[in-house]
Length: 285
Length: 260
Ligand SMILES: Nc1ncnc2c1ncn2[C@@H]1O[C@H](COP(=O)(O)OP(=O)(O)OP(=O)(O)O)[C@@H](O)[C@H]1O
Ligand SMILES: [Mg+2]
Image (cartoon, rainbow over all chains, first blue to last red; front, side, top):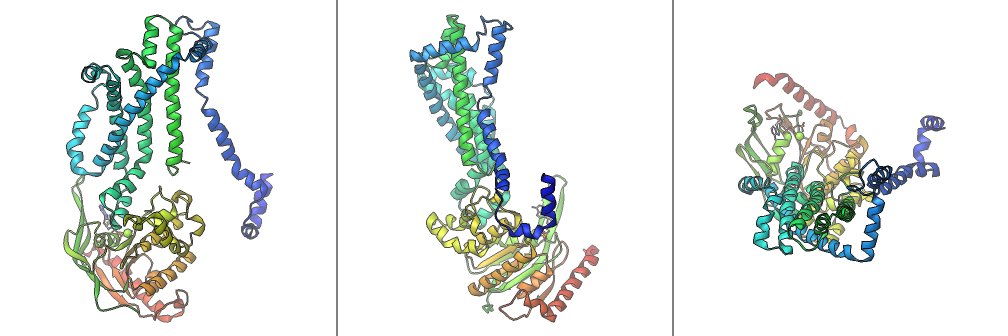
């Protein structure tokens, strides 16, 4: 049927051009891919569930050892009972608060440092190598030191996350700013924009796609770091919960903790994705 | 007409070269280039691709430093520039792109959108003021950058093939509009183009440049009366005489390129 349509279009191009309105069919065809896209996107949020499904099946069939890998249904049961007893919420709250504060403490300086060094040659030449030398220091390895300096309270958690996040944000933002097409800087200069304006009007928006990559990497890394940090020096938090469950050999509880932290990370990434789609509409369709 | 005897742009013995450290080689884009543009004058610069037109314009716009010689834009105020490349900001809507120069001056958004609304009409983008550039065609983006330069309301307008990406009809319309704005505002315009036809349509004077390194081969007065009708102009026999003259200059320079 589409072949016939195309034919008539070709034979009467003028008439076709005059009609500015779309037929209802055409309107439907125009919108169809977007509807499909939305359906797919909504489904895609749940694709991690596939892992749980495979896991459940393997555990039920006895393909994996249930002592070490209890089936998700058993984990969910424990999970529910803990939610009912509100036990888990205390830990989730503590972890989220640490991640949020530490994330901001690292991301904001990292962002500014990235833009600053990206735009200005001299600071880049002086500070750049220092940052490059510090970046490879393993964050977990300096945790004892940080505990020593900042105590076992929340401050040490903020700091260790902030350090990890800082570098990721710095490098991604820096890369983004270095890739700002020269022509945009020329336009700004030719209109007489000052440094601050170049910073906020050109460098920042132009680097936004990479900044969001940095934010996503940072969010994931924050949860990895906080779990490890809570193993060592904490009385609360999901990491502490995993560790204490492990020490009492409650494998199912341990998995509840692991699933919880992975869900927290996943939700954070999804949230950042949503924000990115709002804030960077020109980057992708 | 508002052409006066005062000078607006002076280019004096301008030499500009580029160095490529990887191959340790240099490209001389301009060698000892001199010309001047009077206040209120409309001057077109034509010449073969790669002869240094853009380079000259970038030096005049203070985006590039001369190797030797001097460039002066008389009477303060920076020139407004329309760039040859795609230069609209992908993260700003059409209206925000056009109003950007006013934003740089610290004007409130409401006011700057108010002040630039007529420019959106002028370049025929009424339905698209809230669109982002990736939703526009190449020619539409080019029109946005023309409007953005006009928003600056500078005394001197430097335009680097601003209508290059446009179809013939839109091009004629915008040429006519540009002439109208120029006539009404008394701006000084330096306009780069590949098109001899376009140069003769617009200019008071046409500067014909040689192959790289660019020199001025000829400085031709275009004496058609103002205001001009960009279509009617083509019935004038002198238009075709001048076209022929410029073409033979360009042809001659192509043959003699090996001389330097
Ligand atoms: N940034 C640069 N680095 C190295 N060489 C350059 C640079 N900019 C221009 N050139 C060289 O200078 C010469 C003149 O370039 P320019 O852009 O001024 O040409 P043009 O006359 O504007 O050409 P077109 O009409 O094709 O735009 C060319 O040979 C080009 O290769
Ligand atoms: Mg050029």
